[in-house]
Image (cartoon, rainbow, N blue to C red; front, side, top):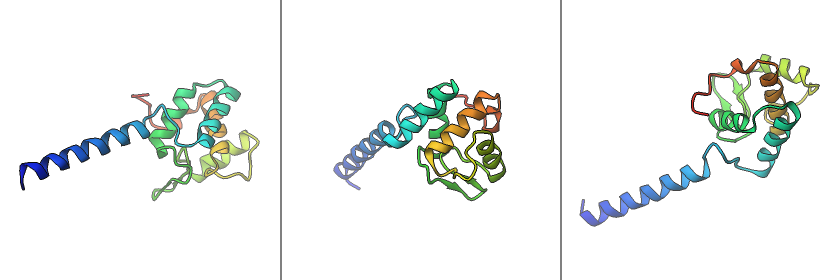
Length: 125
């Protein structure tokens, strides 16, 4: 491989890495819908918006349709028993963990109730 081809590949890789870092950073939601849902939930339950954003980024990269083969669903990666429990507490029975508004509300409620340990510790948030 020539030096020129290597240099172009290196620059393209650096540009891609920069774009991914800036577009997927924990401080930014990927859509207005997700950002609004996270903000509303934080205000409603008096929890840290930064923590909700960080958790959403870590669990699903802000993608409400995320699914894990281990059986976790949505923006905050709920399993079905936890989702049913949290949705019932929040008065959101019948909603989906794939709905960003419902998922943010349930997550914020569980954190406000001291049940944030349902997710692994947020060491870097």
